[in-house]
Every structure is written in structure tokens, then in C-alpha cells.
Image 1 (cartoon, helix red, strand yellow):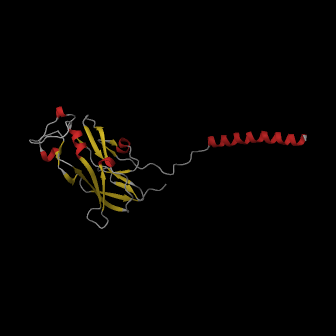
Image 2 (spheres, one colour; image 1 turned 135 degrees about the vertical axis):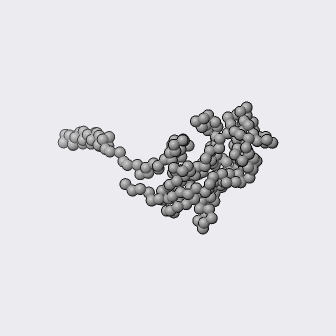
Image 3 (cartoon, helix red, strand yellow; image 1 turned 180 degrees about the horizontal axis):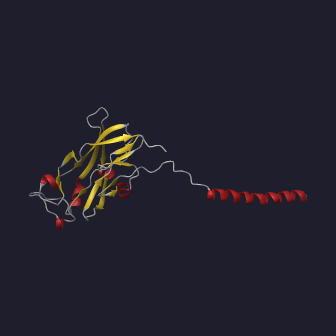
Length: 211
């Protein structure tokens, strides 16, 4: 009986010792590598890090410095933001134009219907995606100059094949909108209906770096 008790006591003493040793090893072990390293961010001289600014986790295709994505990786299309005069009191418009909402940015947001994204326009690989305002339009934003703006950011798109591709963005508005920043209709207004908001931008899909 004494021998059995001694063996039991010895075992009880060994278990905590093993736990302490194991915990100590875990505490000092090197952290495991991240299986999904973050994608390269879209950084522009004027706007800074767009991924951080708009909380986008995928690769951004948009401004000229951001025209490359990786094979087998999802990506997001960003169109230039639409800025307006800060308020109705500061707004000026082309002759004959009357906004439906007093503040120009509210007028734009209320007239925005959808954004259409066309990849590889005019090729056998052409794809079209149309998303309603609630899926793409970010509002309540302000630029460095203090002016309000809204921006359309697509949901993530599936990866495309390696090589050169193009992407163009169309907007649909339910009525004409003018930004309140000038009186030249061609420069300060967007038409009713569906129209090209961006050019047909080329971009590259390249192999993902290894190592």
C-alpha cells in the first residue's frame, strides 16, 4: 500500500512539471507564419493608402499606380470619387439647372442608381456586373480640402487569367446632377441614364510571388 501511495504521489508531482515545461516551450516558441500574407496596398501620391482609407482587404485596381493583381486572387475596382461643393450656400450651377436636394453631395447620392463594371470589353472574355447603390456607394467622406465626396467601390471580383485585361466603370443616375463647383455643364454635370464614368483601364494579372 505504501509503495502504491508513493508511486501515485510521484506521478502527481511529475504531471505539473510536464505542464510547466510544455507551457514554457509554447511561450518561447516562434509564432507560426501567417498562411495568408496581406495583399500589396494601393498607395497614391495624393490619396495615400486606399486599402486603409476604405478598409479594403483585397487588391485594388483603380488609379494608375494600382494596375496589377495576382493570379488566383480576388480584386476590387475603385472608380474616382465624385466631389461637390460643401453646401447649398456655396454652390453655383449652369443656367437652368435646379438640384433636387439642397446640398450638392446629397443631390448626387439621391440620384445614384447603380454602377456597372465591364471587364475585357469587346473580347470573348467580356464580363459585366451591375450593382445597386447599396452595394457599391460609400458616402459621408471628405477630401483634404474639406469638400464632401462619394465613391463607388465594387464587391470583390473573382480572379482572372494571367495576362493583360481591361476594366471600365459605368454609372446610372435617375436624373442629371451638377456638382455645384462651376457653371460649365460639360465639366460640372453628370447626365441622366447610364454613361461611362471611367476610361477602359488596362491592368495586369501576374503570378503571385513565392517565398
